[in-house]
Structure formats: C-alpha cells, structure tokens
Image 1 (tube, helix red, strand yellow):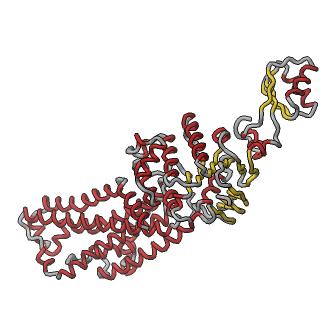
Image 2: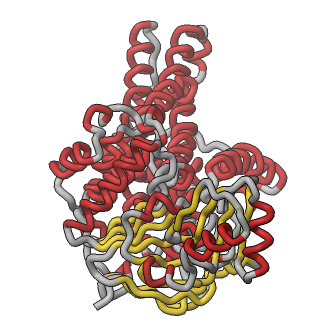
Image 3: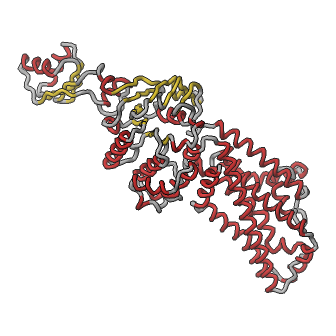
Length: 298
Length: 259
C-alpha cells in the first residue's frame, strides 16, 4: 500500500493555477525527491497533503486516509514546511515542548531530539537569537519529535551552510536506514541527488516526470566534454554530423556521439585535444531537460 | 483536548506577552489610585461621596483592563499567523475548531484572572490610601449590598473581562493580520463607538465595546455611565456578541488555507 497517494490534485489561488491535476504515489521506505523551480507548486502540494491548504479539486491520502483522520498525526507524519514557524521570543526547548504537548508526546523526547539536532547547548536561548541554520535544525527536530514513519520536508536545506548540507544528507540517510518514508522537496538538486531513490519533477504546477533517476536519465544520454584550442572548428564538424554542441571558449559539451566518435573526428581533422571525457547525466541535467527550465548553470 | 489545553497554557507561559499584559494592567489599575490618593485635596475626595471609589481609580481599572485583555486576546491569535506557528498548531491538531475553542477558553480565563488581580489590588491600594489620609472611602454603601449581589456583580465583571479577551481571540482568528486587527479594534472601540453613541445613543448602547463597558462600569454602587443597559442585560448581549464572533471565527478558520 502506498504511504502517500495524491490523485488529480488541483489548487487555484484566484487566477493563478498553482497545482494542476497532479497525481502520484509514494511507496513505504523510499526517499523521494520532489523537484521543481521556485513557484512550481511543490510547497502547495505538500501543504495540501497535510490539510493546511484545501484542494480546489482532487484528493490526498496519507497512511491510508486523509491527514485529519489520523489519530495523533504528529506521531505518524512529520512535516517541515516553514523553518521560521517559531515564536521568536520562545526558547528552542519551549518551542519543541509546545508541539510535544499538543501531540501527547512525552517531554523527555524533547531533550532526545535537541541532542539529535545538536541544539542542546542553545535550547534555553530565544529562537530570535538563532542563525538560519539553527532554526532549520530546530524545525527538523520538531519533525522528529513524534518519531513519525513519514517525513515531508519542504526545502530542508534552505539556509544551511555546506557543513549543514552534509549534516542534512546524513540525517536523510539515517531516516531511510530506519525504514522511514521521506518526501523531500528542493530546488537545489545537489542537495538531494546523492540521497533520493526516486524523483518527482513538477513544473508550472504540472507533474512532468516520476521515477528513479537512472530510469529517467536513459532518455537524455551522456555528455562528452572536451577541450581544444580549435574549439570553433571542432564544433562545426560535430554539428555537421548531427551532434548538439555547446561551446564556452575552448570547452565543448557534446550530446549525441560517444567520446570515441568525438576523438575520431578530432584525429581525422588534425585537431589537438587537451581533454576528452564522458560525463553521465546529473540530476541537474535531467531536471533541466525535463522541466525545460533555464535556471542554474548548464 | 487536554493535550491541546496544556499546549495552549505553555504557549502563554513561554512568552512575555501575558506578563506584559499583567504589568500594564497593574499600572493602569494602581497608578491612578495612587495619584488620586496622593494629589487630590481631601475635601474634593470626601465631596464625591458615592463616586469616591471611581475617583480613586477603580473606574480606570474597570474600564481599561478589559480593553487591554481584548488586545491580549487579539495578540494570542494573530501571533500564530505573524510568526508562522499556526502551521505547527494545525499540523498537530488538524481539527481547527478545537484549537480556536481551547484558545478562547484559555484566554478568557487569563483575562478574568488579570481583572481579578488588578481589581483587588486597586481596591486594596485605594483602601490603604484612604486609611493613610483618614478619608471615608464610602465602603459603607457597598456594605449595604448583599453578599449575593456583590458576588453577582464581581462575577459579571470577571466574566465580561474574560469574554472581552475571548472576543479578541475571535477577532484575531477572523482578521488574522495583527496590526490591522489591533489598530482597527482600538479605533473602533475608542473612537467610532463613542461617536456613534454621541450621535445616536439608542444605537450606541448596543455596540459591542459599549456593551462590555456597561457590564463593568454599571456594576455595584457606581453610577451608570453613558448608555443605560443594566449589568445583566449588557452581560447577556456580550455573550451574544462573543458567541457570534466565535462561530464566525471557527467557520472561517476551518475553511481558510494556511499558506
């Protein structure tokens, strides 16, 4: 049975169609990346799954039913939707205690979670004194309070420094090792590339792809990168043979022919190569190809 | 429901809003009394007879503390939206109606408790001040009131302050924007209703804040001020207002998106 089921989900805010007929399901024990540029409809979809936003059409089910029908939902589903969702005058510990009390979670769990997110030393301080990264860790701690079997994380890497991103990756791996189901949204692809089993790609409110990265990458093919002082000449030759070539000064990114074929063309035309390598498509390549967006470096 | 109640109480205890309210209420209640005892000539105090308690500052306490509590009610609800804590609140308790009802209850109790503390302190301060200056406080008139009537009047004042606080919660849930709600409520309460009451008293006496005020200031032996609903009538109308506002707050909160 799917842990999360979304069927024909649609949300319209006035004239803006934020989510357009999105359907997908998430299997238990998987970690799924929910990818899309800012404003694609990721957050709205996640908020509809947990009943914070009412769908215009369609339905969502979590663990077999609507979120509001779950008994003590915070012990079944943890959702990080807004890292700034804490009263600035309340201490980190009290922020967690409020959520724990409302969910019937024992107070001892608060201390355990504070240790897990490495905030024990700052627990007495008011949240207004926290850095963005500390607030993000506090929000992750809040999600872990009920030790839920399902985690919905909306842009969990926002505001984290490189050390924090590494910490987040470890965090996600630990959760999957524990058999949790994770749906993590992000527009920073490197953040989730090394962690996710599957991806959902959403663009302009529509779900445009779903599946394992390797499976989706098949249709894209590898990129051959080469560097030569005669880049313009080599580009002309490769384009004449039907390849798609992007050039930046002496560097070429070639789609279509293999590295051997590119090397042969260079040899046949006495073009010196300083570098020739095959690069498997990254999640970013996949995303840019499928979502058709121009964001970020290609 | 009990878990939610505990969480709401912790929310109040873990920030300084309620403490700030209590301090402000104490200043409002006690400062005028102290100033009156120290500065007003004895002859004038004695001359006021039945109105002496009012002059000594019980009136400011009785009329301003409920307004302060109402603002506290607004803040306790709008802070959830302002700081984004409302997401966690509705994620842990998806049945939003329960959240609003518990918040109404908790804030009503806090409002009534603050009124009780400030009222007692104002009376005690007035009593001590009168004792020091050898002034008859006019308590003999109060002593003519039966225990039952006194209990009824005090209860009405406390209940109405609680209701005013809960009314603030309902307004906050309806409007959600903190500055607009606080500013709009104060402008309405302090200016608009006074203007309407001045121009058309028969309409003014039924307006919400004028009704709240009538319960408080028309209680006991203090002369009725302005419009003339009895305390009991005003209390019943207050109940109707809070019931209406609460139902509207629950209805809209259940239907709105939390974005």
